[in-house]
Length: 316
Ligand SMILES: Nc1nc2c(ncn2[C@@H]2O[C@H](COP(=O)(O)OP(=O)(O)OP(=O)(O)O)[C@@H](O)[C@H]2O)c(=O)[nH]1
Ligand SMILES: [Mg+2]
Ligand SMILES: [Zn+2]
Image 1 (cartoon, protein in one colour):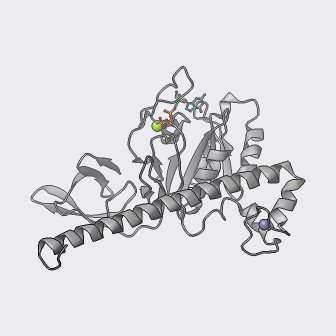
Image 2 (cartoon, rainbow, N blue to C red; image 1 turned 30 degrees about the vertical axis):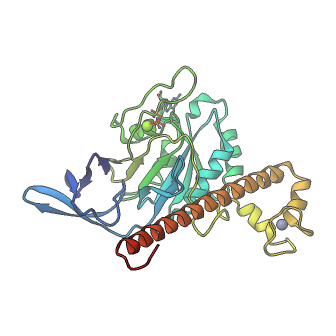
Image 3 (cartoon, helix red, strand yellow; image 1 turned 180 degrees about the vertical axis):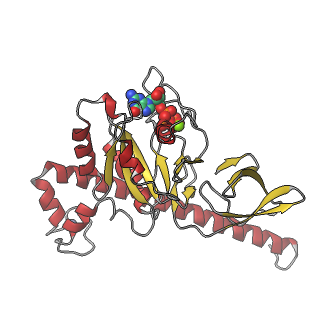
């Protein structure tokens, strides 16, 4: 349900309890949403193992390291939250890419619908960027549109909410739960949220759906599986079928159907620009990842050589 310091809050179906890590940790570190095997040892509950995951929502770890950071496991639907009064299409594309790679289905949630004149216009704009994903508009303040989220939350279904700080993720969960189960906070004067939620946590709704709250993330570098950008940019992918070369990069290749389409259409041009930017970013992350692997490999060999020398098996 939630990670605590040195322990996990787990739920056995009827009770919540704290389970500690064994001195020999399970080979996979549990994250919120995991099914774990727990055992009682002299009154203390331990996590013995993490069961195989049906889906993993990941991002590239923030900061200098480039590694997969698993945010949540076994999530069925990921609600990508974006505020109606400040939609950021580029961020949506990145989040959507992560969700298409996760094994979960996306639902784009336009929050704070009460702040705009015409939420449906916003929904239309968002739909144009988030092809293939359902888009809902909600207001946790007046309860408008909540049923479009509940419709995706059957008994036993887990929905994780992601999005920047202050978009109203925790507020939405409170509205759906019908009581203030999570802390929420006013946005600061400069318009930025203040990272009210600090841990990923599962909330069980009265009718059996589960919501996974996450802390707002400032940056979101998607961790992309084999599918790559095809899910997010299905439109580009489809047009690419008409390119002369099957490995066309849609740059300056002759007979590129995407570039031709983009030259007469502002929307396609914008999508192509996004596709290129994200493609470049992913290539960069991959190179950084490879560099790290090479460095690890080098360290391993250096250590091994040192050890062999110390044992006097070879002369320096
Ligand atoms: N007008 C309006 N305000 C909302 C709505 N939902 C949330 N808010 C306000 O937005 C602010 C931030 O809400 P939170 O639910 O704490 O946002 P969060 O996404 O959980 O933020 P973090 O936990 O920091 O990631 C609060 O002041 C809420 O009252 C809404 O539907 N309409
Ligand atoms: Mg929150
Ligand atoms: Zn092309």
